[in-house]
Every structure is written in C-alpha cells, then in structure tokens.
Image 1 (cartoon, rainbow, N blue to C red):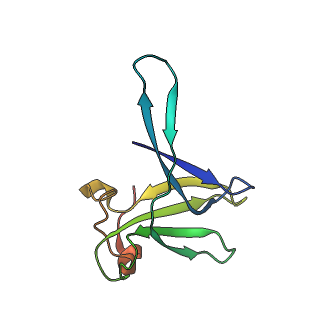
Image 2: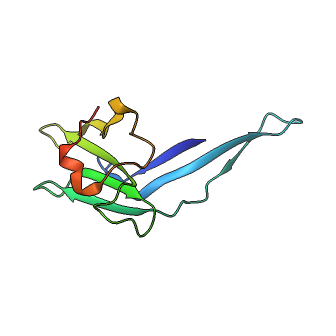
Amino acid sequence: MTSVQIMSSDKSTPSRGAILPVTNTRRADTDKVALDTKQLDYTEKFENNATGQPVYHGRAAPGTAVATAGWIIIKYTYDGTGAVTDIQYADSANGNADNFSLKWSLRATYTYA
C-alpha cells in the first residue's frame, strides 16, 4: 500500500488529516490502475512553532491518550524562508517509525531521522 500526502495551498505545510491510503490493483485484462482512496480514521496532534508551522505531527487510533504508546510522530524542519527542508520520523533507527509504538507526550525526547 502507498500513501498520498495532500499539501496545503501554499505547498509548505501538510494539510490536517492528509495522509490517504492508496491501493494499486491491476486487472489481468488491462493495464489500468484503480485507486482506493478511502480515508483512515486517526486522532492527530500538532505542536506548532512561533510562526504557526507544525514542528511535531502525531497520528494514533482514536481515543489513544498522549501518554500511551500508540503514536507515529513526525518532525518538520524549516529554512529561513519557512519552507520545509526535512521531514523526519521519530525513533526510526530503532524500527519504531511506522508501527504506532511511541508516546505523544515524549515527542521531544525521541531521535528523529
């Protein structure tokens, strides 16, 4: 499965709730690709910098407490003009970047890569 990220109109920050799963399926009798774009249900948290840009973005199953393991956390880095220069996932060196095993309350303590 692939994800599609929808950006805000100025293309500098992601839109809220913008990750949509995309499933590619190929019919045996054609070369056409069908896309399934149903949205998953997530709770999302953001921590913004002084200019209102998201620095941390967390996603978990609805009802997951901020101090409970069950989050994926992303960190955004910006240049002097406000453009995104890096998007890093928390604790990816330990294999935890995409398995909903982190705590939102500990987002500043994780290593991002």
